[in-house]
Image (cartoon, rainbow, N blue to C red; front, side):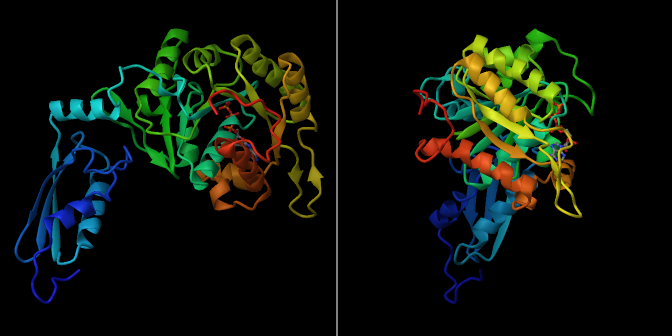
Length: 385
Ligand SMILES: Nc1ncnc2c1ncn2[C@@H]1O[C@H](COP(=O)(O)OP(=O)(O)OP(=O)(O)O)[C@@H](O)[C@H]1O
């Protein structure tokens, strides 16, 4: 905005108020609250100079911060120009920031495991690989974020980590002291083992290291206040499922299967582990449930039928609680393309059969926060609600 006709110098408080509207892109809190505004100078002609502290040198989001600060300050009446210079926090400042983000809590605590936590944690499990567990996870996350929920995803599929690519997250997390800032895309905060390994190298860790990695993802990552955290587990009944049960005992299990008999049997075994770990199974999602013919709309049951219901019935029997089928997702080439391009189908094609099915399931799972009225999930509310 141009200097007003009387040449009034812009008010420093107004400039600071404008800066308070700029959130750090990783921490998602105003830069003014994070001690990131080093100085503000307003010259007579209306030129404003803002010095901003980056949390770390070489911060990948320096351009974003510069752009957003410039845009916010430019809107203040009387401002004729904005110059943003960047500095880097000292070790002491970083320690203070990390301590304030932790809210004075002791280190290494998993916030989601605390009794008062309001975050619902869903661990997405499958028996076999390749049934679409990661695709389902990222689409549920994106759909819930689009519905206004604060959502995080931990890609705990250590051997087949694909979540960042499917969600369109690139780049590595920034570390502030011993806190890790998760990158985000499509409104979803993501952390993946793939962000900590060079190139596309395989991860060959065994149990204790996997446990440690998961603990770090849960305790050392600054997630902020999440409504929902989704954990994409590796297929099968491996070490990670046990670690999840130990680290976040209140996590609820979501089982993904295909309609195929063989896949359903393995999925049921994977789900049964919840009985031993005393975790709740929130429901079963059947993926790849038929493919609508592109020419005549007739549905071709490529992988057979009924797997989701079989798994749900089996788990209902072994757990003694009602485990419902939450939904069925058809085979849809747009879902696969969306995964390859980092654009979840629930956002690019929300009305497609797969997009609509995923959004309906996300609505059931995300909507539980506001109580269970009107929902037929067939579940028993836990005391955290
Ligand atoms: N409903 C669907 N329609 C079309 N393609 C799908 C569907 N669901 C998944 N796919 C595709 O199937 C492949 C496997 O999916 P995905 O990687 O999500 O499986 P996964 O169970 O997470 O595998 P893993 O656990 O082995 O990593 C991907 O190429 C994905 O795009």
